[in-house]
Each structure stands twice: as structure tokens, then as C-alpha cells.
Length: 365
Ligand SMILES: *[C@@H]1O[C@H](CO)[C@@H](O)[C@H](O)[C@H]1NC(C)=O
Ligand SMILES: *[C@@H]1O[C@H](CO)[C@@H](O)[C@H](O)[C@H]1NC(C)=O
Ligand SMILES: *[C@@H]1O[C@H](CO)[C@@H](O)[C@H](O)[C@H]1NC(C)=O
Ligand SMILES: *[C@@H]1O[C@H](CO)[C@@H](O)[C@H](O)[C@H]1NC(C)=O
Ligand SMILES: *[C@@H]1O[C@H](CO)[C@@H](O)[C@H](O)[C@H]1NC(C)=O
Ligand SMILES: *[C@@H]1O[C@H](CO)[C@@H](O)[C@H](O)[C@H]1NC(C)=O
Ligand SMILES: *[C@@H]1O[C@H](CO)[C@@H](O)[C@H](O)[C@H]1NC(C)=O
Ligand SMILES: *[C@@H]1O[C@H](CO)[C@@H](O)[C@H](O)[C@H]1NC(C)=O
Ligand SMILES: *[C@@H]1O[C@H](CO)[C@@H](O)[C@H](O)[C@H]1NC(C)=O
Image 1 (tube, rainbow, N blue to C red):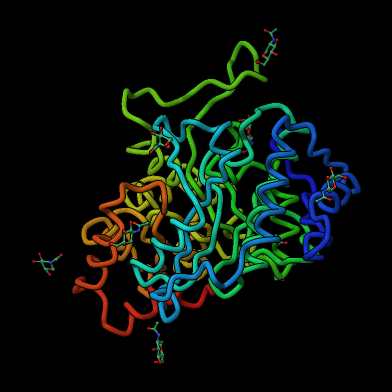
Image 2: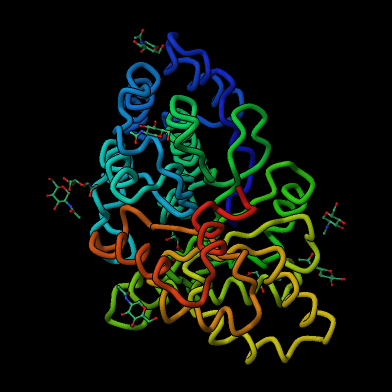
């Protein structure tokens, strides 16, 4: 089963100048999460302590001061996470530092980044709840530390959700499937019920590698990418379409009217399959779901989504005010970032005002 239990960010994280390491550890224990289930916990905690001790506004490049673009799709890769995830989507995981992230923002006029964890996120140890919970906790503490020190420039989507009583994350990041369960599966219903009534009602979806449960042994996961191409190249677009279709058919999008979904990569392959699968649904589900795509989903343009792919999405009547900027930094090839921004700026599909809205995060932020 996917792990959906409470992964609180510790209140203690915010007592700067103290031994953060000990407080984060103790708060995790109070929530029945033992960080030392992970052999690199000491290294990770020390990297978090360093953020609290050292990070301040002096890290901000001058060119960033007046930047206005809001980036809803960008990732951090702490070194201890990189060490356990050498590959993402079957290609080498990019190196990342906060300084490079800030430099990237400054170079592209991005004034605020909502941080998240790309695939595989906390699903590095399938079947091991203790390690998965500890990893999610450390990743959340790391992002919370950055946001605490530089709140003007960063917020974050938490890895695996539930009540964040202190440092409020901007929303919750979920993968297209967690250990083979797509997001419409009833195993996620308690989670969505919780988020639906919380202030933290934003759900950011991120694609991951497709996998299935071995028919001979259901606790064994098998890769479901049958092609020789890295999954980041093709499968991720299908994954986004699959999980959106699953959320639709199970009526998750329809029932949880208070959730706001941030859908990556302009919906991936979803616009290409939307009519084909949705016409098998009862008329009320069709109409309600299509209305939800236009009113409760934001579609990020990490891609390249402009100038071509976006036509499919807009063809279904998704309003341009539902498009938001996403970079996918540092996971996209470096030459694509400025090109995608230029393609949006150059697009004849949007008015000048609509472009400003897209780059400002529209009404989601
Ligand atoms: C913080 O607490 C941890 C655990 O008690 C301890 O190992 C570490 O040495 C302490 N660090 C500092 C800087 O006091
Ligand atoms: C930022 O904008 C303010 C007000 O327009 C201006 O005075 C300042 O020089 C700008 N700073 C940078 C680094 O561009
Ligand atoms: C990350 O950095 C290491 C050490 O410098 C280097 O060997 C590796 O190729 C880099 N990985 C990527 C994906 O750039
Ligand atoms: C930002 O631009 C500077 C100057 O062109 C360049 O040296 C730096 O590598 C760029 N940063 C990133 C993250 O691409
Ligand atoms: C949930 O996922 C399991 C395993 O893939 C599957 O057998 C089951 O049919 C799914 N249930 C729903 C309601 O999606
Ligand atoms: C099923 O797979 C799990 C996870 O890989 C493994 O621990 C277990 O031994 C397997 N069971 C059988 C009967 O092969
Ligand atoms: C949504 O509500 C319908 C009944 O209106 C129900 O059949 C379905 O199971 C619900 N789906 C979820 C995910 O709660
Ligand atoms: C989600 O919240 C809305 C607003 O409070 C409510 O109308 C709706 O019934 C809730 N959905 C579910 C499935 O609980
Ligand atoms: C801008 O868009 C026009 C078509 O509207 C196209 O011909 C031109 O190549 C585009 N330029 C850039 C730099 O993307």
C-alpha cells in the first residue's frame, strides 16, 4: 500500500539558533518516524542545520530582486537524495545546488519558485514504510528550511501529505502512481478527504515511471515501460494522462470539489486521449469532469508545451487563465528553459494580459 500517514514537519524546525538536528529528530520520533532508519540521516540533518545556520538574503543574486515570474514546477535535489537516486526516469539525476537554482531564477526573471521533489520522491524503498516515511520527512524538512529562510523566493509542495500544523506547505506533491497505484485508487480517498477540507487543498501531480504488481508476487513491482526510450522522454506524458483518466473515471476530480489540481506538462498526453476515454463515462461525469478541468485544474507549461502541444488543451476549452508557468528545473535540458519562456512570450494564442497572468501563477498563488 502507498504510505499516506502523517508526516508532520516539526514545529521545532523554526527555533533558529538552536540545535535543529536534535529538535527535528525528536519531533519525528514523536510522530513515530525514526529518521535513523536511513543510514544517511546524520548527513541529511546536518545539511538542514546548515541551511538554518547559514542561508540568508545574501545568497540572493541582485538580478533576482525585481524578477516577477512564478515557477510552479521546479525541483530540489539534495546531495544525499542524489546519492540514493542516481537515475530518474532512466537518465542520470541532475546535480543541483541552491546557488544554481537562484542563478537559474535570476537568469530567467523567476522571482518565486514552488519547490517539489521529482520522481521517485519518497518512493525509493518500495514496501518499506519506515524508510519511506523517514525520507519524506527529511525532504520536507529540507524544503521547509529553505522556505523558512527565504520565504519571498520559495514555497514548496510537501512530499506525501497530511496535517502540516506549523510551516504550511503551499500544497501537496503526489506522483502519477505510488507503487503502482494510480491517484484515483480508493487507497487515496482518505487522503483526498482530508485535503478537501483543509486549507492545504492544492495537489501537484508529477509523473513517475510506470510499474505494475508482479502477477506471481503482488509485493514485487515490475517496470511497465516496454520501450527502449528513457521514460522521461515519452512515458511521463502517458503517466500524466493515465492518472488524470483514473481521477476522472473514479470520480475523484468530480467529488472533491474543494481540491485544486496542478497538472504538469500541460496535461502530457491527456488532451490526445480525453475524448476517447471520457465518452465511455455517464453524461453527468463527462460534463462535470470537463468543467473541473477548466475550473479546478491548473496546467503548467513545463514542456515544451508552447507553441504546439498547448493547442490540444486549449482546443478543449481550458481557459488560458488556467495556464501557469513551470520550468522543471533542473531536470529539463538546460537550453530549453529560456526557449520555453520565449515561446510563451511569442505566442499569438494569448493576449499580453493573459501572458502576465500565466507568468504570475494566475489565481493559484
Ligand atoms: C545536536 O544534537 C545532536 C543529537 O543530540 C548531537 O549529535 C549534535 O552534536 C548536536 N550538535 C550541536 C552543534 O550541538
Ligand atoms: C528594482 O526595482 C526598483 C524599483 O523600480 C529599482 O529602484 C531597483 O533599482 C531595481 N533593482 C534591481 C536590482 O533591478
Ligand atoms: C554530477 O556531478 C558529478 C561530479 O561532478 C559528475 O560526475 C556527474 O556527471 C554529474 N551528473 C550530471 C547528470 O550532470
Ligand atoms: C546564469 O547566467 C550566467 C551568466 O550568463 C551563467 O554564468 C550561469 O551559469 C547561469 N546560471 C545557470 C543556472 O544557468
Ligand atoms: C486499486 O489498485 C489495485 C492494484 O492495482 C487494483 O487491483 C484495484 O482495482 C484498484 N482499485 C481502484 C478502485 O482503482
Ligand atoms: C515477493 O517479492 C518480495 C519483494 O521483492 C520478496 O521479498 C518476496 O520474497 C517475494 N515472495 C516470493 C514468494 O517470491
Ligand atoms: C464519487 O461519488 C460517487 C457517487 O456519487 C461514487 O460512486 C464514487 O465512488 C465516488 N468516488 C470517490 C473517489 O469518492
Ligand atoms: C469537498 O468539499 C466540498 C466543499 O466543502 C464539499 O461540498 C464536497 O462534498 C467535499 N467532497 C467530498 C468527497 O467530501
Ligand atoms: C514567433 O511566432 C511566430 C508565429 O506566430 C513564428 O513564425 C516565429 O518563428 C516565432 N519566433 C520565435 C522566436 O519563437
